[in-house]
Length: 351
Image 1 (spheres, rainbow, N blue to C red):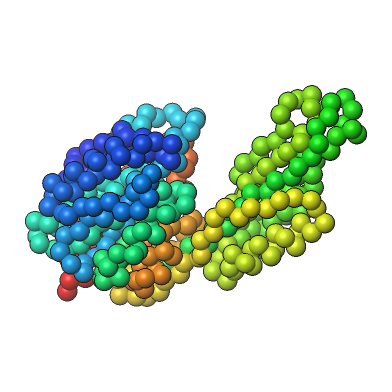
Image 2 (cartoon, one colour; image 1 turned 60 degrees about the horizontal axis):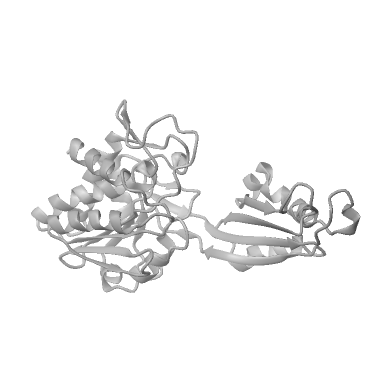
């Protein structure tokens, strides 16, 4: 089984699947594998980033993941798919092609044992999460005995995650020769004043005390070194606890920026998620894996699933601190344990 899961993961790693890639290749591979196992497979959702739904039987456990990744990026010292000391390296090994490989391999065993279950895989989780919006309209989600989202948790059941609030700030100015800046209106300087109003929110001490994290993710401005900038744009990513809503976050930002001249575009919001760590399935996961429930800092598709099914859980292989980093990896042992967890949980919920 070790060789099969690793081989499947390496097959997935060989296919580019960031949001600039053609998702049809990795979807064809996954569909072919799940159909060969005996599952019924179909695609739903947006044409550019479809979601895959695979089913066997009715009303079993639903296992959820995503095939898309962030771009590979720079500063890697390991090759994509390289094995070293019982680790597999590559973009998506942890977040979360490793879990997808475990699901694909577990499908064979569950079908052979005639255990009802389903697998749902999206291809746009790292951005807009539109695929899961199509998935949750399906009866299999509402009727599932539980939904396990297999994001990286080092195989500890996670019961809480923060909400997401992403927005874009734009300041506009007037171009002029840089030797005579008084003839123009510097958009970058305007942005400097805006960010100054938010700076303490992005500092570590504030984030520890409020539980809200603020990251200035991108900044673009100006056209040339000897021209006063006539535009500047900053993208900001905020994660907030369940005690706050998107409206609360917007109010904080608007109040902080009062008096400044800017444009604000809210690009994406997702509510926080929290489940009961003492629920039956959560406790069964803890007992089977020998791990205690945890809280994770990232966002998943859990709030979307929870809007139609109250039995949603998060647990998967990989260290969440490695997600989106150079030399991302997953431990082979965790892949094996994830495979066994899938099989055990699918059988457990059938009583």
